[in-house]
Length: 479
Image 1 (cartoon, rainbow, N blue to C red):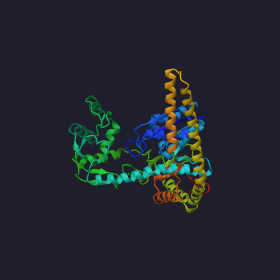
Image 2: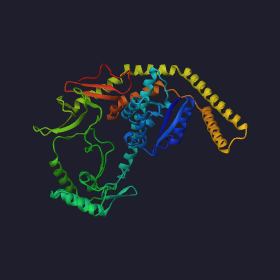
Image 3: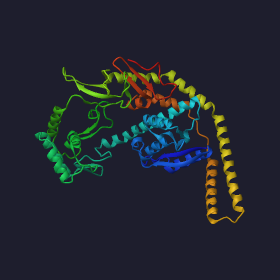
Image 4: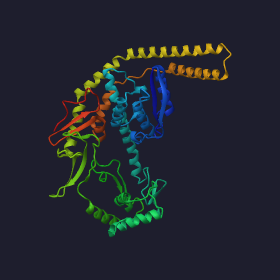
């Protein structure tokens, strides 16, 4: 009999999600049917879908670490999206479990062990992350409506402001220090004394932390202090400060500094900007050196000849591979996703789904047989306990322990009787999803479908996370 643990995660902001208790109940049902002994439960509460990153979930990390002790063989989750929303996180952490000889089972998405199950499992992991992206798109629509009215759209107010009825009002104490920051920038006196003054006065940022140079930098770059309401629904691809497409409404909120002061400060700060800084990295964690295999990092430089800014990828080990233009990576990724989701590839996925769905009757029969056997086994145990009690003369503590076991068995039997066979996934549902991301390829799409990008000046080789069968299309895309 294999040893199992349960992992559950409840998202407080997504009230339609199954509660942690319900997830545990589903896992217990599955364990009851498959002769698994539940040793422990790991539960993370109140983590949002997008914010609940695996690295920040305490119980999740404890479970991963505990797997190294080989004290359990299986991790049960309700659905794959409870284990990880990010395809990258899923692959990384399931690999860690597998390295420790621990398997992962999503009880509501158990596809068996055949070839088609590999594709279905990969698709469900990718679908899970895609739905989060789609949900974010719907959320942005609601945020846009608020933004067009210059209303606060959630989160912390900028230092210097408070929120009253979703409108910005000046916090005079904080605003005084904002003006001092701008004065320091305009007079080029530095911020050392101001930082000490704020710390001595107990002035804290909106998150309760002391205000130091990084926070001051962000404040000086924030155009809202001029009274201009700015809200970027989605930041630009390579520069989060470039908000050309943002909603911008002049004089929509009270000003703390003038437009003229703000513009002068921007000019001063731009003069201090140094060449050779880190660049925005749309493919963070995916790009590796095609020569030595080390990770590559994004890098921005300014041409001495014409002052034009350009972004590249550079090997972290400085192996001599040289730089690879970010535009080259962009082109290769766009081409690869188009090739990955071509009709031929989709046909392979459809065939796998057909093969999976073609075994539906057999799976249902196997499922029903397993349920009947599990019920019969527990009923036999229950009857045995009943026979023991009928003999009489047992100590009170033994009677109490037997009564508890009988109640547990009754609960397991009732759960098993209500258990329904898993639903199949239609070809149309999967194809609609593939077409949706093909029509709108984004950075998120890249992280969904791409496992690794190996780059040199001579070419770019890309492999997919989707399935082992489609791991490399035509040996990878090269440029």
